[in-house]
Image 1 (cartoon, rainbow, N blue to C red):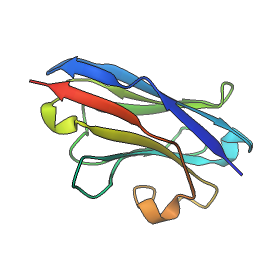
Image 2: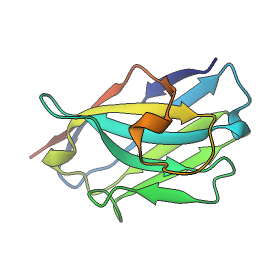
Image 3: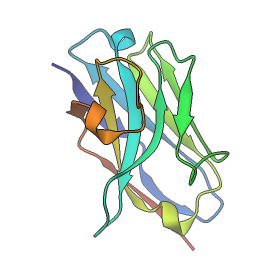
Image 4: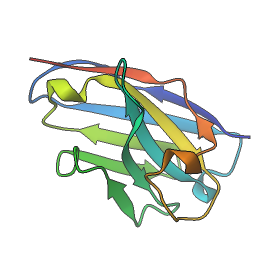
Length: 125
Protein backbone atom coordinates (compact mmCIF):
# COMPACT_ATOMS: atom_id res chain seq x y z
CA UNK A 1 0.00 0.00 0.00
CA UNK A 2 1.23 3.48 -0.97
CA UNK A 3 -0.25 6.80 0.11
CA UNK A 4 0.54 9.96 -1.85
CA UNK A 5 -0.21 13.59 -0.97
CA UNK A 6 0.44 16.44 -3.43
CA UNK A 7 0.96 20.07 -2.50
CA UNK A 8 2.21 23.32 -4.03
CA UNK A 9 -0.46 24.09 -6.61
CA UNK A 10 -1.72 27.60 -7.23
CA UNK A 11 -2.34 30.38 -9.74
CA UNK A 12 0.63 31.87 -11.60
CA UNK A 13 0.91 34.42 -14.38
CA UNK A 14 2.18 33.34 -17.79
CA UNK A 15 5.94 32.82 -17.57
CA UNK A 16 5.92 32.19 -13.84
CA UNK A 17 7.03 29.16 -11.84
CA UNK A 18 5.68 26.68 -9.32
CA UNK A 19 7.13 23.67 -7.55
CA UNK A 20 4.82 20.77 -6.78
CA UNK A 21 5.67 18.26 -4.07
CA UNK A 22 4.40 14.74 -3.49
CA UNK A 23 5.02 13.02 -0.17
CA UNK A 24 4.85 9.21 -0.12
CA UNK A 25 4.28 6.79 2.72
CA UNK A 26 3.37 3.14 3.23
CA UNK A 27 6.19 1.58 1.21
CA UNK A 28 9.93 2.03 0.82
CA UNK A 29 10.13 5.09 -1.40
CA UNK A 30 13.24 4.14 -3.33
CA UNK A 31 11.48 1.01 -4.60
CA UNK A 32 8.93 3.12 -6.52
CA UNK A 33 8.92 4.61 -9.98
CA UNK A 34 7.21 8.00 -9.66
CA UNK A 35 5.27 10.05 -12.17
CA UNK A 36 3.31 13.26 -12.62
CA UNK A 37 0.13 13.41 -14.69
CA UNK A 38 -2.43 16.12 -15.34
CA UNK A 39 -6.06 16.43 -16.36
CA UNK A 40 -7.86 19.51 -17.65
CA UNK A 41 -11.67 19.77 -17.48
CA UNK A 42 -13.31 17.70 -20.20
CA UNK A 43 -10.02 16.17 -21.33
CA UNK A 44 -8.25 12.86 -20.85
CA UNK A 45 -5.59 12.53 -18.20
CA UNK A 46 -2.16 12.86 -19.78
CA UNK A 47 1.40 12.15 -18.79
CA UNK A 48 3.77 14.93 -17.72
CA UNK A 49 6.97 13.37 -16.37
CA UNK A 50 8.39 10.26 -14.72
CA UNK A 51 11.50 9.40 -12.75
CA UNK A 52 13.24 6.12 -11.98
CA UNK A 53 13.76 4.69 -8.50
CA UNK A 54 17.18 6.21 -7.99
CA UNK A 55 16.43 9.37 -9.95
CA UNK A 56 18.94 8.53 -12.65
CA UNK A 57 16.46 8.35 -15.54
CA UNK A 58 13.72 10.87 -16.34
CA UNK A 59 11.07 11.07 -19.05
CA UNK A 60 8.98 14.03 -20.18
CA UNK A 61 5.99 14.64 -22.38
CA UNK A 62 6.85 16.76 -25.41
CA UNK A 63 4.50 19.50 -24.20
CA UNK A 64 6.61 20.20 -21.09
CA UNK A 65 10.11 19.21 -22.18
CA UNK A 66 12.58 21.98 -21.46
CA UNK A 67 10.21 23.76 -19.07
CA UNK A 68 9.45 21.21 -16.34
CA UNK A 69 11.88 19.18 -14.26
CA UNK A 70 11.05 16.12 -12.18
CA UNK A 71 13.29 15.19 -9.26
CA UNK A 72 13.18 13.14 -6.08
CA UNK A 73 14.72 13.14 -2.64
CA UNK A 74 14.62 9.58 -1.37
CA UNK A 75 15.77 10.64 2.09
CA UNK A 76 12.54 12.68 2.37
CA UNK A 77 10.24 10.24 0.53
CA UNK A 78 9.30 13.10 -1.78
CA UNK A 79 9.10 13.70 -5.52
CA UNK A 80 9.00 17.20 -7.02
CA UNK A 81 7.88 18.84 -10.23
CA UNK A 82 9.55 22.17 -10.94
CA UNK A 83 7.37 24.04 -13.42
CA UNK A 84 8.92 27.02 -15.23
CA UNK A 85 7.68 29.24 -18.06
CA UNK A 86 4.09 28.34 -17.28
CA UNK A 87 1.46 28.77 -19.99
CA UNK A 88 -2.35 28.94 -19.82
CA UNK A 89 -2.47 25.52 -21.46
CA UNK A 90 -0.67 24.06 -18.43
CA UNK A 91 -3.84 24.64 -16.40
CA UNK A 92 -5.01 21.31 -14.97
CA UNK A 93 -5.27 19.20 -11.87
CA UNK A 94 -1.85 17.61 -11.38
CA UNK A 95 -1.61 14.11 -9.93
CA UNK A 96 1.30 12.28 -8.39
CA UNK A 97 1.45 8.54 -9.06
CA UNK A 98 3.60 5.58 -8.02
CA UNK A 99 4.43 2.20 -9.50
CA UNK A 100 6.21 -0.74 -7.91
CA UNK A 101 6.70 -2.32 -11.34
CA UNK A 102 9.68 -2.35 -13.64
CA UNK A 103 10.80 0.59 -15.79
CA UNK A 104 9.09 -0.22 -19.08
CA UNK A 105 6.69 2.51 -20.20
CA UNK A 106 7.04 5.18 -17.51
CA UNK A 107 4.71 7.67 -19.22
CA UNK A 108 1.88 5.13 -19.56
CA UNK A 109 -0.87 5.74 -17.00
CA UNK A 110 -1.76 2.05 -16.96
CA UNK A 111 1.51 1.22 -15.26
CA UNK A 112 0.69 3.18 -12.11
CA UNK A 113 -1.22 1.66 -9.22
CA UNK A 114 -1.24 4.44 -6.63
CA UNK A 115 -2.49 8.01 -7.05
CA UNK A 116 -2.66 11.17 -4.99
CA UNK A 117 -5.72 13.40 -4.65
CA UNK A 118 -4.45 16.03 -7.10
CA UNK A 119 -3.55 19.69 -6.81
CA UNK A 120 -4.83 22.52 -9.02
CA UNK A 121 -2.40 24.48 -11.16
CA UNK A 122 -3.64 27.53 -13.07
CA UNK A 123 -1.55 29.45 -15.57
CA UNK A 124 -3.13 32.85 -16.07
CA UNK A 125 -2.71 35.02 -19.15
